[in-house]
Length: 181
Image (cartoon, rainbow, N blue to C red):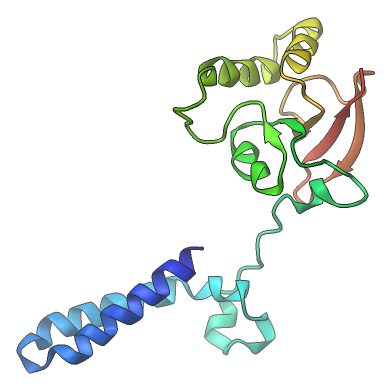
């Protein structure tokens, strides 16, 4: 969304500078340079809307492939459904709700969630290295967790635990486990 918000603002500022006239040439030059610098730093994000092959050489050199997101959680093969509860650490918890599932703790502060502190502590405790298996299972039950998303080494129940069934692996190595026990 950043390019969609900033590019129109930059174009509007450029039009104002163009219409400002001779009295403000110094300010216009400074603002113009800032706008060019801003456009150049954002050039890599043009790849979100234009294929790399269609970009001019210098812009193509700054190309960044679009972020793959968490759509792999809700593919027809995996079937994490709207409203399912997912146990995930902070960054995934910020992204996963955009695809329909809920997370145990919100990825961002949620002042309207009365038990937010308890939920954040529960996620921290679930992934903590010294947490007993029974306590982890209790956290999953307490919040009705149906899925766990974690990188290998994040902590939580071990990969071969009978309470989890490995379902899918995301593009960056995150593993989706279904809670089965």
